[in-house]
Length: 113
Length: 113
Image (cartoon, rainbow over all chains, first blue to last red; front, side):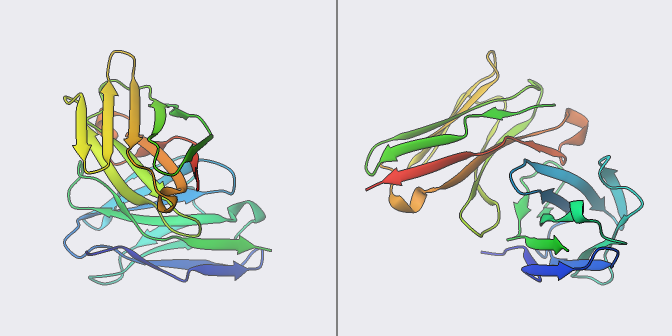
């Protein structure tokens, strides 16, 4: 069964550094998403992306964050100048169309020290 | 929906049925979802139900939807140790944001031998 893949599975970075989290969505899916889960808290929506542009974003997704689809298969989340509170599990997801179920990857655990 | 509520813990004996409950807030949601998260893994789409349905059955899984009470439940028949995981219900934040899911806090299901 096709699946969403994320790399790396674990990323450790120092405060103030930039990180790029990578995702390969399911190939025939058109919508892409990033969610995050801070340890002990709920899974939170960050951003959705369609047709090479952001379609929705939450209050969390401020100027520190950006997304890109650099080629036909990858979807990336860039976090500039990381802060301690950015430490979380970041999940990528994709869906076939806007209202179809979201399929999530296994996540990247980001640890900011 | 602004808040999706779930109880945090449930323990059952192997072979018994498990019932995981969820209350949601937006009665106009089109789909409601159940995701499963095993330790160290991502969010696996378990099942979903369309809002015009009362019940959906898929092998050992039964989803019941009570729109009047905004109550969603997931029943797992003949629960196995491999069912031990965290189960999240999720709903679209609003009809216009079907892609922006609001998650519950998750119910940790422990299956005792």
